Length: 302
Image 1 (cartoon, helix red, strand yellow):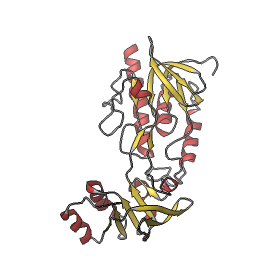
Image 2 (cartoon, rainbow, N blue to C red; image 1 turned 90 degrees about the vertical axis):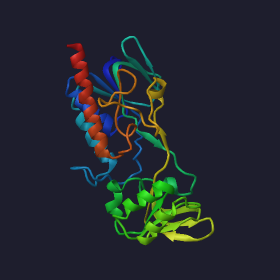
Image 3 (cartoon, rainbow, N blue to C red; image 1 turned 90 degrees about the horizontal axis):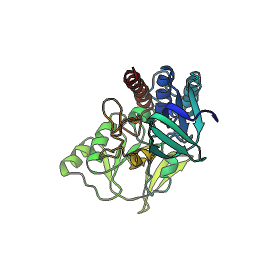
């Protein structure tokens, strides 16, 4: 890497979306640098599902195979490190990593994902991605017909309860305090046999991330095998905002139909741009971004 400092494209984030973008650009003969810190958000998740040809494999296994395949394209280079700052330059952009090294490129792609903000409930973080779940399409089949809970309230609690009822009859909604569901919503859930429990949660009792039961502050318990939760997040990387990229009201990087952010020359893909948080979608978005960016660069330079 010592003689390689200028690139056509720098991709910040080398997980599924970043690798897919890198492959598309590498196959388009673009000189690419992929910067990755090695900490994907799903690193605690034991298995990935609902991804053709990869169903049931570990996230790490999928990423390792993907990287080996991208490394086949000699114009794609990798550096391990955390991108700490970025700025616009006369000819494009400059990215600095935690080692102090800097790299320049004409274009940027941020495939940096998001960082989940864990609630202050004992055991929650240890179970996240293992038995505390965010997506039924990724994990619902594996916990089908088992005692399942939803941590939520109000509109989210009601709508998600309706959805998850597809996978199990043993469903309960844990509002972790006074329910804010309407009388009509409450009655509809009760008619479907979905319990609404308002007791405040003290702890998720588990064995190596596998949920056994909820323990409430009043001393009561609820045996449980899986718990769905929708928790807050923040952008994993602050550089897009520092460059002027707009965020949506939900906190995702705002992109147009060409995967471009509000800053010319800066693109984004994957979990940092959408609530559709699946490996397959991240790969699809990355490949699309790489192809669209290459097309624009080729036509602009023609």
